[in-house]
Image (cartoon, rainbow, N blue to C red; front, top):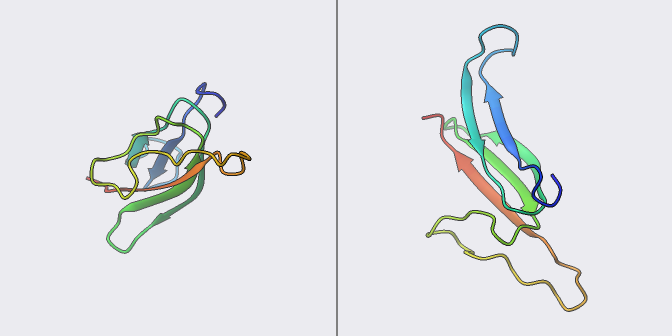
Length: 91
């Protein structure tokens, strides 16, 4: 994932990926810059929880999200990225 040439793709199968797997979760999400997934888990309700960080100024967010735009970098450029978390349901 570098300079928008690739984006995080998150897929989790409910069976081993051998023959005719069933895709339980799937999405394509990311911005035009570097995006990284740092952790993936499934919660007790069966939702997929994904956390990571992004350098993309246009990383997609929902209207009711806590922070709707990426934070601007510090003058010394020490925080040029922002974290993200997303939850996907199996339906």
